[in-house]
Image 1: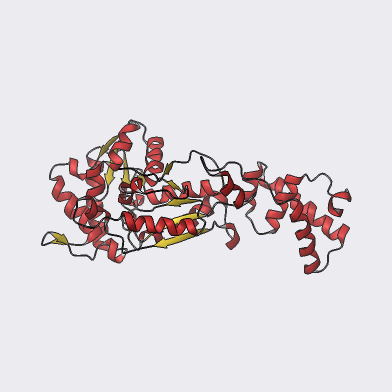
Image 2: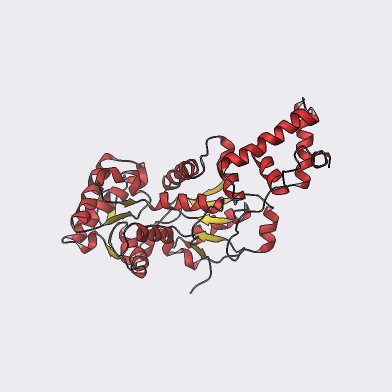
Length: 365
């Protein structure tokens, strides 16, 4: 191994050489520095030392020669192992991924058809914010399975639509076959059904509900949390139960005077369209992705919750943030679960820090 015998870069250990190779292969400096536990400027100095050695010691003047040298070194120093691995993962699958490899994200999309697009944008923005990603190669890999034909989750909860579980299971199986290390589902109401799924290959779900409730506890410990969500999500207690477990006090439009009418006109209609002849007629956020009328209606409901004492709001349907954001509600903190999930996903992919809120997809009766 002439690169090590020369002595010019003898102070570079195997881990340092591995970090240098990852930088030369296009990985982001901040991400590599995070994983090796060294300041970014120090890691950059390792790269400069290596490159200087290449120029002065090896006289690599041609691209082909440089690539051959890197290939030889890569065989001996494939890079540092990830800081941590998924709880309960199968060791053989972890080993197959190889040292230094990022985890592959699996996204269950189509719930509705615009929601996962918004989530993907938030993944990219989170990579930029948390890692300083700027070039193509800095961003994470993911695979997506979008099945818009999945029956509506709220209607299914109330027994007026088919069971969405077979469609959700089909999507997760496709992601497993594509090699996803874990799965995210950017749909709040879908989490009502996920526990019924069977995990055939040990795939993990990073829970949108759990990461959101955890963030709510950080921002408003013991506080009153207003929830804007579909009626199915509210009636099921999906957020209510999780918030109460952490000592928070949930509330929704249904808890307010004239709550049923408020929930229907100012929340459900903006999401699903006008309610006529005992059904929604379409044309809401799920159809168009954005609508000025939807924004005005949702803002009415949000302000009612704030006026009733909410210390924080959760926008508990992935379509709602398409029309409503924190800038419209003054000083009241607003949580977009898709944004919180995107940040948690980036932290998991790059083994940054913080707890990972996994649910194993197991059989339940």
